[in-house]
Length: 341
Image (cartoon, rainbow, N blue to C red; front, side):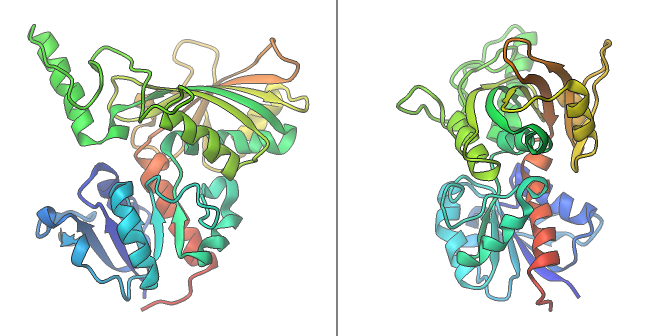
């Protein structure tokens, strides 16, 4: 006997990946219910090698009797329907930004703060962090345990899939147009994304940072340690899948490259690929379709007393979204949910 699981936003990039991960990890389901907008109702969607599923309309769906809802429909939609699902007894694991900074909603990366899942009972909602935050804190956690992190400066190199299918399509169409000596104006991005880099993800804040940068700062504090100072610059690059990050870490306590490498190699969810030779490092292409967060280029920062540099790469649709949500669901049923149908 298993659980009834609803996947909200099932026709989007992350929703489809959630379905893939549920199947691949053999999550114990009795029923999977794909939900999306009314326009998508009736469409068929695959669930591994199982029977084809028919999408149902979210706005009229009754969540009574559903155990877990994996939400990725956009923040404005989650704002309406996640509390409705939670009130019906469904534990919501929400991938949007809507509830992340609410004090009574746990923000979870299982490898980092699994114990905080227990707080879900306050509102029946658990938040999945931002994709760029997830991979960074996975890499930082084992280092923080041995040397206490003081400050992090990170520059991200984020793929177009983080902005959705239309963004990936724009990259493809602009690239093809350039090879055909044609011009396509940007519609999804503020500037041309093909063969370019755009230092602008999400809206600008009053202090000049972007919302994506704000998320990395505040989510890291909530998940890992409120005393850690974080400075972020987030950049969109012309790749389809996989986010990369150049992470500079300053510690309170001494830590050697060897200690850092050993801690990372023995940490859950991390694969160290760090050879000081041509190709001895991970790239976004290497991480696509993989569950692990890859760490490369581990080296000392000689400009501070206790400092290291890291290169961190992960599949933003898997560990940065769908996989992390399913891992939360796995820990939820292992430690907290006992009701089965």
